[in-house]
Amino acid sequence: MNLLEKNIQALLSGVNEPLGNKLLNFIQNKTCSRFNIDENLNIYDKTHNVFMYENLEEEINFFYQSILEKTPRYPFICIYGIGNALLIKNLAKHYKHLFVFESEIELFILALSTIDLSEELKVYKIVLFDCVAKDLEIQIAMIFDQQSILEYLSLYEMFISSHYYLKYYETSILSLNELCIKSASVAIRNADITCFLPLLTHGQFLQNIPSMLESIPFQRILSQRKNKFENAIVVSAGPSLAKQLPLLKAYQDKAVIFCADGALSMLEKEGIIPDYVTNLDFTDLAMKFFQNKENLKQSIIALECATHPNIVRSLNAENCMIVLRNKALYQRFNLNDFGYIDTGTHVSHFSYTLALALGFKNIIMIGQDLAFDEEGNSHSKGFDFGEKFSGEENIDKLKVP
Image (cartoon, rainbow, N blue to C red):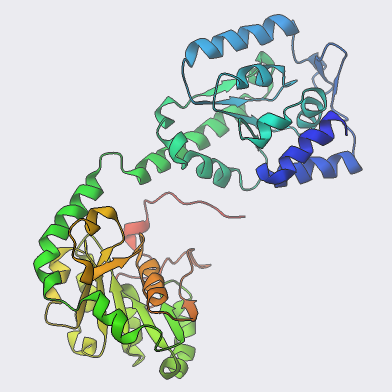
């Protein structure tokens, strides 16, 4: 097994299978036509008739020293251009992770034919990104969302591995840098480093305790209903729900229905009565979903313990169950009769885990699109806040290939 095959094998071991397969397909069907590498490991670009390095040893040492000086004790760095991989190999020993971005498949081939990076690739010390991959944005988002990276995203900077890349790939570098900054901003925003949301929800939980003590204990529901039925349908308010309602109406008596609060009004219009209605909103916008309380008499309303107190108070007279999350913070109160369940971060997750807790063997999910429809609608026809909910207009979105 030669060096290239060894490095590709490392990629195919689960590290980056799409890139590994792309490289494997290339060497089986093509040859490098634009770039070649000489015995001194300098790369020649036939398109621009230039070598990558004017003075290979001096240039690699310059970038090695300048990057190290700018990144003392950094856990990771991002660098554009794999080059001949000498710089990458030397830098890798100084960081937990080295994220390397490259646009040219031929340069991947030449670099991985020259330097053994297999061990670094296997343990994610060096992570290679194909800049022309359709899912590049998703790959970056997944890396930046990891806790060990997220904590240091404020240190982010895109370095280059040689003057050649700056001269001939400046546009690509700027575009990639913009994409990385966007992904970092989304990751930091979602992490809520100000602790605003945890403090808010904890305060709301404390306000909800009196109402919870007067509500139906979750453990009572489990003791009375667990494993009593086999089939459950979890209903969400995604764009596809409207076309699924006729079928749901026809089968409503053959399954237990768990309804996300946003889908409640749509079920009411079809004469469908859900068995459970779930809510975990930390704002009181969701009060609009519960305006027709007469239709709630036959349903159990399951509220997460940090649901907005206004919603809790408005539903006090109904068949209300306030459930504690399965977190140590809530378990310390020893209110065990009212817990515990993984409510997640969105209402359909809550519905699904509630169905699991109740022992349902078959759980069907409908209206859970997690995407816009062809018209750009985020919610189903009949959603109380409109099919294009304005609250989601300014949220960054990922385009999935």
